[in-house]
Image (cartoon, rainbow, N blue to C red; front, side, top):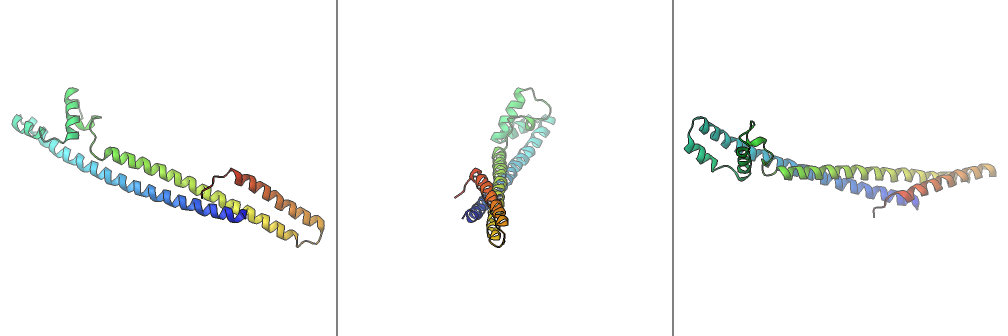
Amino acid sequence: VLTAWCGFESSQWGGEMSIAFSEASGARIEAARQAGDANAARQADLSIWGVYLQARAQRNTALASYVEQRFTDHFGVAYRAWLAQGEPKGGPFRMKEYVPPGTTEAMAADQRAESRFADALVFNQRGDNYTILTVLFALVLFFAAASTRLGRPRAQWIMLGLAMSFLIAATVILATFPIDI
């Protein structure tokens, strides 16, 4: 019965592992999609920033003002922070306030992926642990069955003693394992 139970638990943890790996993969795909959105927003901001810088370099205040009014909301926040700090080198893109849409979502999805991947590894180890216990309980059955084939009572008792030792050790170990039903 304990052999069958360990086989069942091993398969249950294998299922949990598969689900966690699948969720980690989905989160990685979501992170890549969000990072792509952030990169696209960054490229759009860079394009308009280039026009703005060119207008400023040519002292074309009308064009600079026109372009400035077309900054995206997330870039506008960084731009105003950049101006407030006296226009430090590196431009608004280096400001902590510059967060293109998708950036925080990509980081959150990446963290979810890492977490689910780590969970999957734990679940895999649990399934492996139950598989090892299945082998130990099978050894109990082997030694118990082998003891009946021996002709001498002393040899039979030694084999039964081994079987009991494996049974006790495996049962104690089993009691420490988590259960997934």
